[in-house]
Every structure is written in structure tokens, then in C-alpha cells.
Image (cartoon, rainbow, N blue to C red; front, side, top):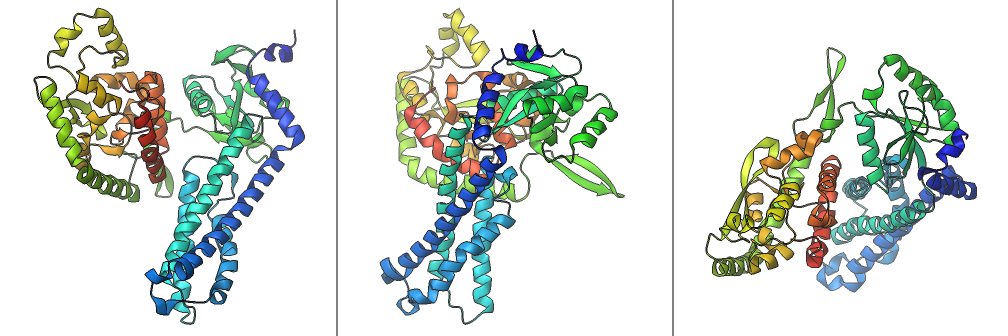
Length: 502
């Protein structure tokens, strides 16, 4: 039986056939050309609509709420109205919003969009300052700035959802291989397989130690050796070659791969850092005596990122406490009346840089919980494995209600004010759980644990422990202020549905 026939049995070939069919209808490069053209059109229309709506709000609909003497005719603003979309498109282009590497990749695109809209806003402010004859109404400009970001982000959001749907049919997918089937290569494969919207279709591994067609990991196979990489690229139309650097035993192999494919316009070469366990903290390159040296950051967030997260935490936490104070008092009384014991339960957990602290929660269990649990050996085993019990006999009636809607965690807002926690972050864990994060334990302690996070909006306790680890690592690696805002918005429906809460 031929190698091709052997490989036909594996699941990756089904997706490969979809990709081949999609590319026969519309070539891969043309797919991206059409998508970028759609972005250009939507950005132009959304920007025009934003400035038009800002004018109507400022000078027509809500004119009575502004300075009446500053009313300006539509003709005065017509030049700005028709020229601004071109300026915005130019700014978007300069900031890489039409570059493939910046598209369809999480919240980074929206971050660049916000920065671009802000730069356009500042350019108009500067133009108004330098040109006294250019009269700019501040209310109009502020609304235009806000609307251009909101409308453009909204259009891009739905265009992105269209691409995600098309990827299930084989469009916008790039076949990829990982060179190296060692532990690092398999970690890379696991991350790529879990991220279904990445746009990469992982075909298999290229590994010199394993024979072709041999299943290695999650039905991924060895396609051949490094010497056969060129043949593999041609046979499977590979567009991305990912090098697990720790699997490349000699420098000659690495140089040979870069020499052959490093400047090719048909395939991209990407290389892992070889420091996969500490990637989440970020790397900085500094020069000493003209020698570039890589510095590993001790924490994930630095500089302006720290300030943004601090402001988000404090503004929302203080506002939430003012609104929720009556509810907190009612819950405290109900806990006290439900069973003897303290109102607040203090759980010792891991914090930033391994510093331990007590996380506050409303008590949801009876105080003699150990005695109650001793009657159920099977539940003790389940607790040791999952650190959670679905049907926990120790939980009080009011405790079960509070857990269902995460009300028991509201006192952790005070942990946020003490800078022991953040509103959004990885799930907090006890010192005993650190070992379960294996090679990722160091990463977990580079950011503050969160009151909510990716795990909270993804099913909570219904998610396996391995999946919780992966979700935490995804958050740490991909943090941005936009991701925090997205998760905060997603937390409300997740809590109301109470899926996985126990």
C-alpha cells in the first residue's frame, strides 16, 4: 500500500480535501484579496456613516444641548465628511489593519483600530489648531471619534464571523506542519489544535526519528523526515512551517531550512523560542556592547499595560461596590442565619510572583465540612482529583444559591482593591494545585488571579482541569485591555445561565 493511501485514513486528510476544493473555487491568495477589499469597503462606509451621524447629532437632532452659536451648516462640514474616510483608511493601512498577520487574530485587531481612530482624532485637533479658519466643533469631533471606532469594530466583528464560518468549508485555511515531534512540538500542536479559529490546518509532524504515517499525537502523523521537507511542502501545499527549535539537534539543519525556505513567497517559516515554558512573560531584546541579548520579563504586564489594568480594576470595582453594597449586606445576613459559623471564608491561594494571600468568599459550607465529607469516600476521591464536587453535601441551601450565580465571590472585590486580585485574570488556585499546572506553573504566577476570566465564561466547573490550564495560558499569552473588556461583558450572561456553577 502506498504512503498516500496510508495517509488517506487519517482525519487531517478530510480537512485537506475541503481546503483543496475551496482553493479550486477561489485561490487562497484571492480569498485574502477579497477579504481585505471587503474590509476597505466596510471601513470606508462605516467611517462616512460615523461622521455623518456625528454631524446630525451635533447640529440637527441634539443641537439644543450644545452651544447654539457654534451651529455650522452642512456645507461647511461637507469637505470633512467626504474626505475623512480616505484619511481614516490611510491611517488604518499605516497601522497594519489590512496586513494579514494582524487580521483575524483576537483582540489585537481592535486595539489597533482604537489607536488608529485616536490618531485620526488627534490629526484633526492639530489641523484645527494650526489652521484658525478651520472651525471644529468639539462635540462633533468627540462623537466622530467614538463612532468611527464603534462602527468599524462592529463591521469587522461580523466580517470575522463570516470568515470563521467559511473556514469550516475549507476557505481561509493554511496547511501547516511542525518540524519536531518532541515535547515542545506536541505542546505547540496542542495549542494550535485547540484554537479552531487560528486559520492553520495542522497536517502533521516532520520528524527524523519517526517513520512516515506513524500516529504521534491527536491523530497527527509523521509525514517524513527533515530531508523530505521540500517534498512534503509540495505534496500537501504547505503554507506554514513551524519549527520546534528544541527538536533541531544541529545548527546545520536550521540553517539549511532557512536557506531553502526563509525567503520563499510560497511558505512562511516560524520558529518557537525554545523557551516555551516562560513565553507568557514576554521577551525583551537589549544590546550590550553591540551584542543583542534576550531578557525574560519577570511579570507579564509592564508599563502602560499595568496602568490600564489598574485603572480598569479600580474604576469598575469602586463603582460596583457602591451599587452592590445593599446586596452584600443581605447576603451576609442570610449566611449568618443559614448555619453557625463565620460570614466570610478565607481561602489561601497563590498570587503574583508566588506570593500567597487569603481570598475572601461568603461562606457556603457548614463549619464541620470535613466530618460530613468523611461519610462519602467516593466524593473525597473526586475532590482530590478535580478540586470540585458537583453534588457537595457540605454546601448549605443559601450557599448553593450563591454558588449558582457566583454571588459568593463578590467579597473578592475587596481583594481587587488590595491589589491581590484583578477583575479579570486566570483562575486562582491553592498552593497544592500548582503542581497540576506542570510546565506552566511559572506562567500562572506572572499575573494577578482574576474574579472572572476565560474559564469563567467557558463553562466553569464543567470544564476539565486540563482545559482550565489551557484557558488560563491562553489568557496570559494574549492579554490586552480589550480582552479584559470582552471577558467582562461575557461574564454577565455566563453567570445568569449558571452553566457549570457548583
